[in-house]
Image 1 (cartoon, rainbow, N blue to C red):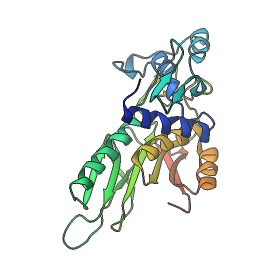
Image 2: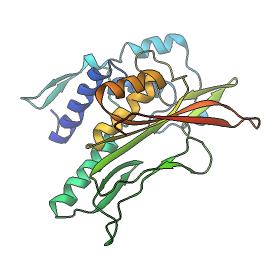
Image 3: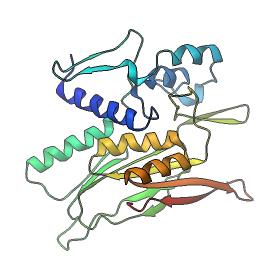
Image 4: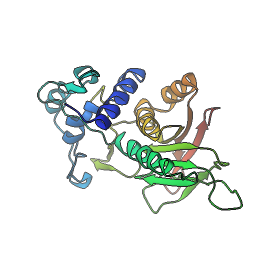
Length: 253
């Protein structure tokens, strides 16, 4: 049996798993743990797992193994199938705070939980809208890459990237973004994604899904869905060995 909020989160997770053909999958937990990015672990201590262990973990991954019963408010899952809500629960938390504030008559707010945002109204009496910043996808001090203006609109913003949580081994970089379909960390040029949506929960999950899909597939998926998405792609390395970036925005963004 599940609480109503947990059932709601898992229902949206399963809907998006189908929509993204498994790029977003909350059963990825065994793979996240295996690669050293699970709860209580630190990427600096991570190691590349054995292929046999990856194959074994993949047998416990697959959103199709979760069966939700809306009438009973319950879930059925095989023994050994674990759930990781880190790419959707923060967004749900932001939405919950927004619902609480709106229930108290608050119409002007800026909510942030773990980088996911809900924005409404204006920030002062002069009716200036909020100005969220898009972070540069670098692992040093936080820098602004771009910014946009809410103009008083109500919206949610969520981002995902591979530029802070990773480890290196034998000269190769391994991201915490694990593709549940292959069992491997992503290895493409998409560095970060930002998504605008009415729901922070949905934006949170979509940002992760797009990171898994990579620059071309993510852009096509967002374009096809009419989704507002902002993609930052590694376009090369300068003479000092620092990454250079280009960005790509869907018309909805």
